[in-house]
Length: 108
Image (cartoon, rainbow, N blue to C red; front, side, top):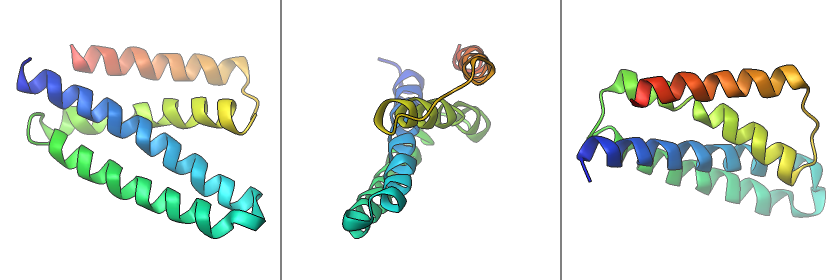
């Protein structure tokens, strides 16, 4: 596999991890009995995301990596819908779809 391909995959993984981290922080506000635990998981997850994203920067120009990082918006919305039961309007799903199209164009 080419280094650029690996870097793109690392950015995608980092974006998914970032989305999960955001949901953990939200969960820390919703579940007061486990607030500290959820906050710790969220912060640790952000640290892991930063390490993976930094590795990705070795194989991609920053402009491409940062643009692909927009997938974190998609991941955050998907995790909040799935894990928190938050509702999303059609236009929000459409906007997330457009982000995915844009990221695909950048990745290609």
